[in-house]
Image 1 (cartoon, rainbow over the protein chains, first blue to last red):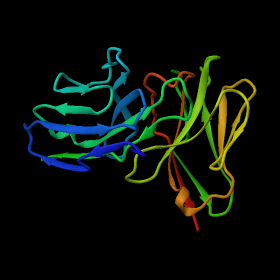
Image 2: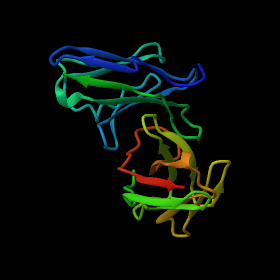
Image 3: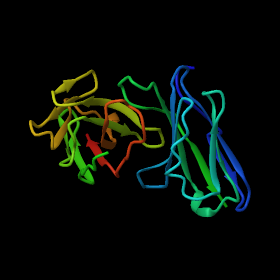
Image 4: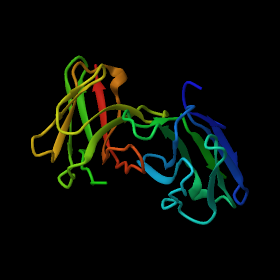
Length: 114
Length: 111
């Protein structure tokens, strides 16, 4: 597609439930990133996928968080047993490795845990 | 990636130039300076990047000091739509790997 697509745009869930957030990157972009942004704060790195390499998971805050990228394209971020502190906007970005121009971000998924 | 320091907030009059500073005193030779902005409720948007030469595109100009320890993003004629949080980051040239976004500078353009 023309841009990075994220779904859903908004998600309200009850504490303790699992949620899945989806990211559809720009076609041909080999690198995909997930960031989290709490209200009024900056972007917090979560995980990075690059081609067929093992992902950089160094930013995942706990083992309740996991992500996968199937076929080198679509990625799903899963949060298990959600907590209120998980409430944030989850942003996905993609880029074509080896070229400049910065990341292209999606519009994000606003997650609210009640 | 090198750490950056930016002022928390700045104001600018509409139609005037907005000059946003960034310090990156620990930048290494192969690290580029990137600027993004985030308008309320949207994902960040890439603006410009550079290594050591000044750069200009349709959105902005980037001035990097000779020692590369600081840079300035210039919006030549700020409009109300330029009100946003501006992030300065440094990263290596392959555009691979994570980037560390700080808290950025909140620019408010006033009429």
